[in-house]
Amino acid sequence: MAKPKKHILTFEQVYDFELIGICTHHSDYRLAWGLNESLRTQLVKAEKDFVVQGKKGQEETSHSTYHYKDEANMLEYYLVKNKSAGKYLIPEKPTIDYFLFLYENHIYDVDDIVDRLRSIPSVIGAYQFDPEEFGSTEYIIFN
Image (cartoon, rainbow, N blue to C red; front, side, top):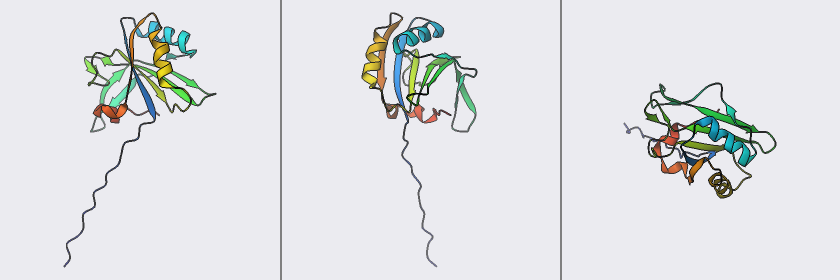
C-alpha cells in the first residue's frame, strides 16, 4: 500500500495598508485635529476601539481609534494608539505612540504624507514602516 502524500498549505500575507508611526506628547484628539488640518481629512473618534485578536481568536488588546473614509479616493485612514493597558498594538515598536494606517492607498505617495505629518507642531516624529517587518501586523485586520 502506498504511503499517503502530505501537502503543506502555505500562504503569503499580503498587506493592503500603508503604515506610518507617529511620536507625540499630545493626546489622541489633539493629534487627530492636527492630522485633519494638515492632511485635509475628517478623522473622528470611532464608536468601537480597534481590537486585535490573538492566535486563538481571543481579544488581546483594545486601542483608541480615529477613522476617516475618503469616498472620492476610495481610501480609509485609521489613527490607532499603540499602547493600551500596558500592551502594544505593534510590540516591536514600543517607542511609537500612534500608528496611521492608510487602508487601500493607491493614490498618495506615503513619503509626502510623512513630510506633511512632520510639519505638524504636535508631531515629534513620523516614520514609514513596512508591515512585513513585524510579525504582529498579521493580526491587524480592517473590516
